[in-house]
Image 1 (cartoon, rainbow, N blue to C red):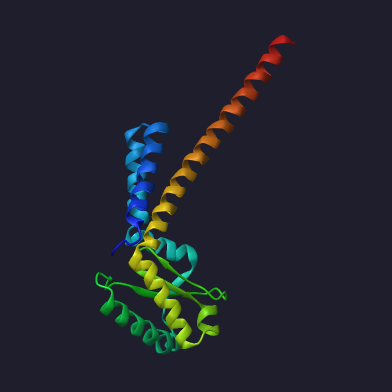
Image 2 (cartoon, rainbow, N blue to C red; image 1 turned 90 degrees about the horizontal axis):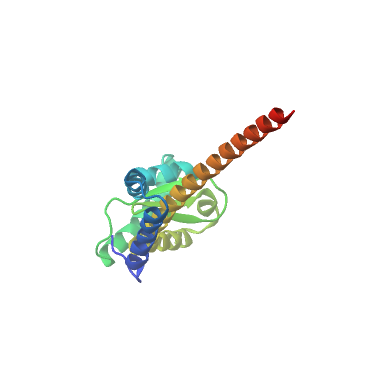
Length: 185
């Protein structure tokens, strides 16, 4: 994997900002360790698998998909691998059941095309879309998006905990006020 166009700086800046937020607002070392582990999880192969599952992407398993998509994918893969040094050898193609004409890259080893793209694009157009997604993988764009997703997930969890604490404190305040009113009767 090679980062291009300043993506290394952006990825490190994102991680730095997340860590800074943790250090300022949540100084407990356990929470910082949890955050780092969450970021590592999201950017790992397991994280890619979880995101594929969330989006409904599945392996190419039918004979029709294997006969049509696999050769197109391998043709693009071969060209990318020969021209772009540092391209991963573990990139896999998946299919999404959506009928929208789209494709996306996840992490560093996953390309997903939608059923709509397979049904509506010519083989040459489909190869162009797949090549575009290889560009995202090669430039590190999709890995950076996973890092953002992990950070957003963490901040979302923190905000949920804060809201729950506010609700509990609010309920306690209502109960306390109710007891005070009863005392004056």
